[in-house]
Image (cartoon, rainbow, N blue to C red; front, side):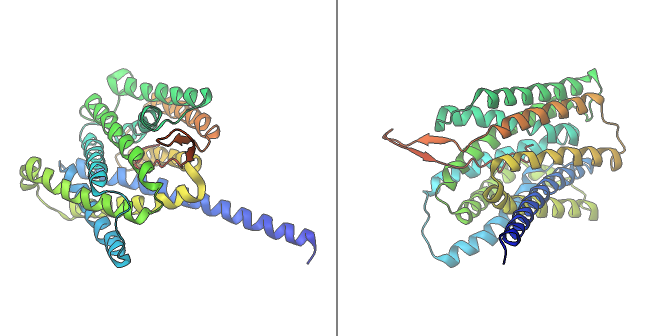
Length: 333
């Protein structure tokens, strides 16, 4: 075999690997868009039960990945109370973002999900010790500018969608704060290199916490629901898509890292535009496209200058590298 043949074979393998990464990235993006679509569909059918939506997802994660964990027969590598805290912030983030679909449009919710990266920068800087370059901070600032244009559009300058778009936007931004806390917590947990344990524990504690909150805040809403085939299909679609999101995201991060992950999720915003125009028969304000363009530029700037950061261990004598895990950013970009 000649050296040229070896070189051609190697290039083919590299190309196939890149195509596989691209496929997985777009699969996650499509799944995220499907989550947004089914959640907005449930809201449009008059069902106000965001906690119930996610409780089915947590149940599925606990059953599937918890079974794998039990089969292994291994002890938890991280104390259970950390997973309790992680499950709590994840549940609140899902609740606030899903609740936002009651008041705002699918396009605004999906684009404002990008606010997660802003909160994540703040939290990782102060609590984990991550340091960012000026270009990364500049990219994040452009993302904030783009999100500000979405708020401007929803305030009525360009005619945003939804019954109470500003309230919906506020809920999304609050939800992204919880998602960012969840991301930082998952960053810490993933250093133990056991994704099965992390996902199964999020499912277990998420299911328990959702059950408690559902019994307190959502029983009356559920009693008033007139169940139909469309509503049941909406819940089933959301459960399936969110389960796939929690499942596929770790593989994308392992193969491609946070750069490709963030860039891949950008296309979920375009899927949201397609859904709003073709399914809901609504027009998309021109400011949204300007905002999307600004966010794209900001994320490309941030991602292309991103490096694997380092955090300092307790004694300060050495640094430990870790990979950023932006898994809950679903809502994120």
